[in-house]
Image (cartoon, rainbow, N blue to C red; front, side, top):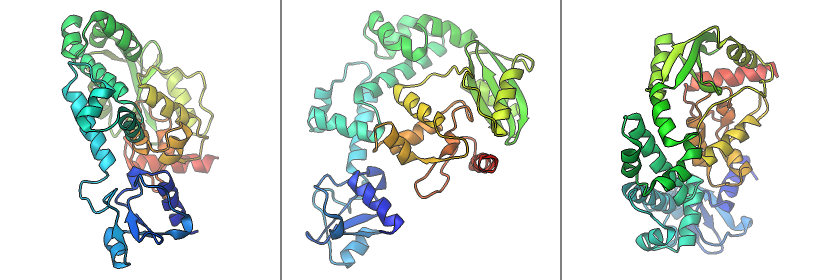
Length: 349
């Protein structure tokens, strides 16, 4: 089987909604063509032909599936439904939203809705609602609001619920986060690197940011945007050891396994980032491979988002994740830097 058709077949078997629109598959035994994510029973491989578009399939004599409606202009129906669920959750943060309630609103069984939601985003509706509330809480606390006001504005009904749900996600109690967000000490340094100017910032617990830019002004502005209320101070001497470890790693040496990191993340992000750290120096993996490794083969887009939100470039090597077809895909610090990193690592292996 040609490599491209093999990838397409794997997408059909996995009901990979991210491939909807990239191609359709037609089944000779039924005369019907479908989206890759069609929920119908999978056909035998020998009965399947792939086409780049609905028009091509119809010219070949196939008719559109009435179940997955491959000609629909709204995109993947499941993805569209999940987007609608997200908007609903965001608009109802001030009240508990249960699976049963979502099922009634969107006319689906709670089980099916949860399974579809996790397949697209990689997390449950409840986890998504929690992350929305935590993000709103952070914004309220950073704005200087009292913990009580921030709590109710973010949709928490009681202080016990607030502390129970947020302590682990904030890394501290909300009142400490409020004080720390305004005055947390962060040391940083700027240095030359193979990718241009690099900034390394750290709290007392470990590295909290690694960024690239063309100038120190850009780097310092980026750090301010990331930690607007922290007490940021340049300290080249105190950061010397961390800088040495990172630059040595970029030149091909093994990264110090005890390198301390101080980063906040959802459970899903941590799973993805841990998987990235296991990719050997000089090698790459696809977004789909990472999704399969963490046990959620349909969460490719969620994996891509986790890579894009990685705050510590190089230390967590999101540059080693590429697209299925070998294309490098995106990179927070520019595709040119991603290419340079990959080429540099491959030469040093």
